[in-house]
Image (tube, helix red, strand yellow):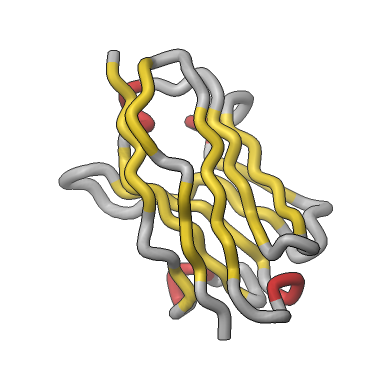
Length: 120
């Protein structure tokens, strides 16, 4: 099992940056692919970015390419989401998720979320 706790959200002006962290409990963090998702009010949860177990492969949705970067530190059991050039449409609750096979929507391992609000 793994428990996930997100942090780093907040209120920022458009164009600024935030770095989200997701800390995982347990000794098996490196066995999980990790993903970031977000859910805006009235919308479905959507994929943002994901990274492989070793950190060697990552990918993100088109709307954040060139602005957001996912990374992980397996020694610290933590995955990060560096968000630059934030836009009001990035406002959402951001969640991290873990799954051995990258099947996040079927995974029981989700954090509680952290709110990101971008003002114009």
